[in-house]
Length: 405
Ligand code: IPM
Ligand code: MG
Image (cartoon, rainbow, N blue to C red; front, top):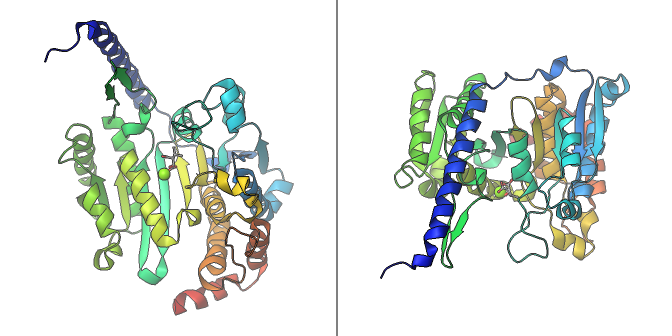
């Protein structure tokens, strides 16, 4: 059957729109080519760490993470080397009012900081009471060019020590809010892979492996079906891998990869994994679940100039509706804070916080969170973490626990 002739105009508009998208992406490529080098945070004084609470349980778990940061960095804050700065206004109400993923004034404040600790923000979806504006996460990753989403998952008892490198500015996300509808029945979204975008994330994964003495990198795509974009990602991986003769690499398709993560015979063998945006979104939730749930995982969004650290879960509006926000588990934000400290040039504080979190969450477990009044509050848990950090024999205790695990 012939298509409705009235639709020709819509097709022409869609073609124009597609042309503009191609131009935009080509200029993004030019910007990537002219990209600056990595910021040396050690040279900045003061190093400004912005803290944005976000929505739902976000302000609660962020303030607990802030307390722990303040505790660890108290010397640096006193001497003026580090400043913790609250960023107001990254709330769904404000974003709806401005009809923007991140209101301009809030983005300007964020850009005055060097590193950001961000609580979860509500991402409107179809059917919500909010207008369907773009996710603040996705917008911030794009605006600050935070191209690497780095997510560690460790389960020592299962010999699992994974570091995920999720490409964070391309794939199905870069134009996620710019799909087109043509006529009443057709919807098209876009996915984008560039040579430069793939190169920078894949190189970062290989560099990480090299620096940490890890001799294997796993590349995940669906290049057998998604031939152009995933095909390019895989080709770039092959080219980059050739520069690292000491590191072996393997490529897996996303479907079988989700199965192998829960295969006890295979799981421990994966160490560094790198993949396009959407696969990384899905796989890191699965991985976090193996570790104990998305509430236990932190996430770093890294660019050459800025970096943002966050939980990988959402804002849990139901907890707030039911008045249970004070029982929310802050461990994801505390893990994010540990990653921030490492990135900021304080690896020793970061290591101590990670050890304290292992003790509190996996080994000793003296304070239990259930998300309800029968468990501890987030403040109670943060206090337990700080007590553990104060203990002079923290490292000894951690070693004892981990050798028993
Ligand atoms: C994540 C989240 C976000 C994403 C959402 C909130 C847009 O799921 O950080 O993994 O899909 O990237
Ligand atoms: Mg996700």
